[in-house]
Amino acid sequence: DIVMTQSPDSLAVSLGERATIKCKSSQSVLFRSNNKNYLAWYQQKSGQPPKLLIYWASIRESGVPDRFTGSGSGADFTLTISSLQAEDVAFYYCQQYYSTPFTFGQGTKLEIK
Amino acid sequence: QLQLQESGPGLVKPSETLSLTCTVSGGSISNSSFYWGWIRQPPGKGLEWIGNIYFVGNTEYNPSLRGRVTISVDTSKNHFSLKLDSVTATDTAIYFCAREYGATDFWGQGILVTVSS
Image (cartoon, rainbow over all chains, first blue to last red; front, side):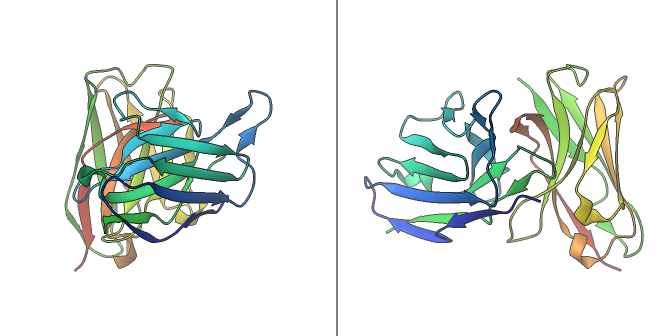
């Protein structure tokens, strides 16, 4: 199985400041034949299902604010929230869908400082 | 707008079988672009992928569930189902059904299933 490791486990950021979450996979999730990274980011608020934010490592899902940016390739990825808003308080998960079983990072709890 | 809704018992006894159904509305489960999956989340913990199914019946399962899981599809009813055998307290979780298009882009609200006598 591909192991996904996020850092940090929790993060407190002031409103309007930048938040950065890292995700590392135990092997590359870059599929060479199409040059796509099989990596997604999800946001989960309390009592709700996860919501897809980013897929193919850097493509923003329709309706997701542009303050959310995904970057990285191979085995190292980053989710950046450029200017934290109160509604961004949530858990964030990365997931690889390169090979089954699809696996998630352990999650990062994002709070307001 | 696509919607997925989980249904089934919220309480299952240890050693029995957990059975859930996911009803899809606002779209066809026979759309060849998508897979249909189950993910679970123990209370206060992270996400675990259980498995998925294609509309013609091809399945993939998480080996961590040691052959206890079966996912099936009924295209005439536009729903798919999960069975998990020989449950224990560690199977207590919120179970989500979802659509997979590579990434998982639509999720049901989830159903809490508690394993307890």
